[in-house]
Amino acid sequence: MITRSLFALAAPGALALALCLPVAAEAQGRSGPAVRAPAAAVPATRRPVTFAAEAPSAGGVLVLPLAAEGDLAGRAVTLQTAEREAVGRALTAAKFSYEAGETLNLRGLGAWDAILVVGLGETPEAKAWQSSGAVAGRALRDEAGGLTVLAGGLPAQAAAEFAIGLGLGEYRSDFHQAKARERTPTGPVTVVTDQAAAAEALFRPRGEALVEAMAWARDVSNEPANKLYPETFVERAGAALAGVPGVSIEVLDVPAMERLGMGAILGVGQGSARPPRMLILRYRGAGAPAAPVVLAGKGITFDTGGISIKPSTNMGNMKMDMSGAASVTGALMALAKSGAPVNVVAVAALAENMPDGRSIRPADVLTAMNGKTIEIVSTDAEGRLVLADALSWIDANLQPAAVVDVATLTGAVRVALSDDYAGLFSRHDALADQLAAAGETVGEPLWRLPLHPSYGADISSTIADLKNGGGEGAGAGTGAHFIGEFISPDIPWAHLDIAGVAYGAANDTKPAGSAGYSVRLLERFVRDFQP
Image 1 (cartoon, rainbow, N blue to C red):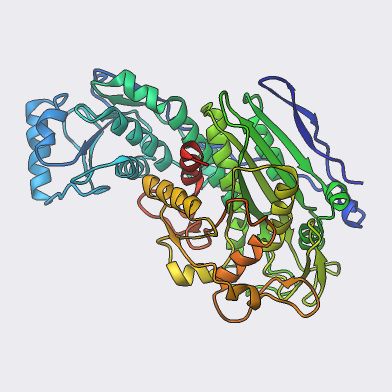
Image 2 (cartoon, rainbow, N blue to C red):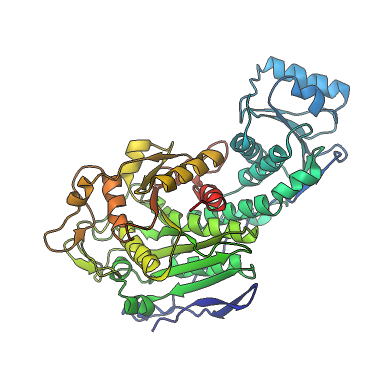
């Protein structure tokens, strides 16, 4: 049999591991040795951050965030007059425009290894300060020495957000390369500001926890499927949240899901030697309301498409099909580790979608936990199936103030919105407005798309209650409509389709791979949530 992994609060503020045993391959009707995770990748070492009223002695890299030409004279007082004048001449020669994220890297000036000028934009705000910090962090991630950020004259929030951005930007996805084991530890970050105490209070613990949670979500999304699968996702989440006050973790294994009638997620996972899991994370901070905000994430740790197999080109990218589960887990992690006064539950529906003699087939009929039957049109429309049981469980067991599910659900949303927006679907305008506002604040924008009544007809079935796909039309919309069938209409619910934004090529703020998209959005949304 499959052993059940259960993490529970042994005492207030303590997270204890009650049971976490190997899962045997025979659990899915096979014989053979237990499937276990290989050794974890080498974790990246983040630079420690301090805030100070005065700059340390010259050395390492100096970072100059500037919004306009006139900022140089006041902010670069640490520099010698000749150095400051040289920087000014270089900015003029380069026709530096001070746009957010623009950089100019200068070397050979005074005792500094380098001086990096970073534009903040003409009217900087929180997301610009953070994104400019991320650009600087990525540009300087290979610098072994310390970083000194001259933030004098900036608001305390600007200094804190820039420091958060530095932490996000220094993230590395090359943790399986041999050189990762030989990398020299990086030096600290000193943020020099006349509001050091206020900036530090804004950065710690919230900003620090957010950087850590983003790195965790990116790590698991970037991991290959031979190292990250349902069981190991659970183990990593438990390890990351161990000892965090207010957190409890429950894991449903195959027997538990069978008893609950979760035929949808079990159907998706039955073709894999690695059985599915339903991970339920709870965090309630001091003074939090009774009704939780619930975040549900699609967690397909690898998606071949099943019997409806995908083309081989770029199939390797399907290791990221659990990005929704990574994001909701990361958001809860950020909130819990910062001690936020919120009540939040994250549910990760975890399975591997593989072709096998036991896999589900097109035309099969599955029964979800809420009793609804589903005709399978395509086994590659599996994310909505695992979320069907996740939302059914939420509906039956929680009394949520709101439910938001997050999924790399459809290629159709990328066709509609490219990689500029995630798709937002909701039956509840007030909830949609709060999510859109949170996305705008953190720089993870959402574009609301319709849930037209005709989508119901598109997914109607002649043999079952509904089918898991519908025609050639609005694929993102019919997918969202399907998921909405498994949560009560009176519960405020929204669906975020992040398939176009979760994963991609390198840019100025991140390496190739996971963007950790929606961790910051959900963290902000839950903090600001109004019923």
